Length: 155
Image 1 (cartoon, rainbow, N blue to C red):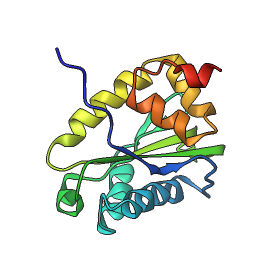
Image 2 (image 1 turned 45 degrees about the vertical axis):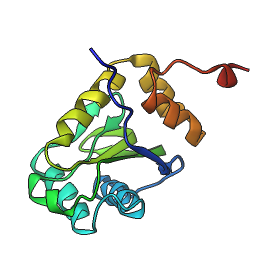
Image 3 (image 1 turned 90 degrees about the vertical axis):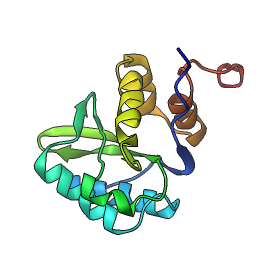
Image 4 (image 1 turned 45 degrees about the horizontal axis):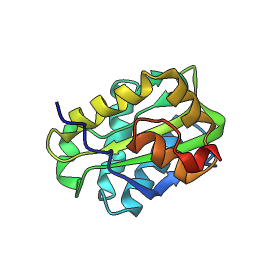
């Protein structure tokens, strides 16, 4: 079986010192990061909030994966992932979220993105590293590879 393709993560969509008043504000920030890299049009952001109102995107371990509804597929230009780290945490319906991984995908691409993210998030060491990351390069490496440190990162 072939290795999965790396997640479509533009380093410009990684913000490591974000702050949000609440869950909706955090989702809007994720959506704006996706808009900023040209992955989605502005209406997609509202569908991310609609999705959250129907079902929480909190997945555990301080991580949420906000994404839009099927109705917004036309607002997606290309598959993309953004990562926002909230060092102060965000109340997510009674849970504390430190990392939001926003996703946008054309067609049914979100299924593949969610599957790839699940593999990463099932590894407690990688989730811990993601929550503690202080450099964009660390986040990109964690999400685009097997999560093992490169020689550069260990020296």
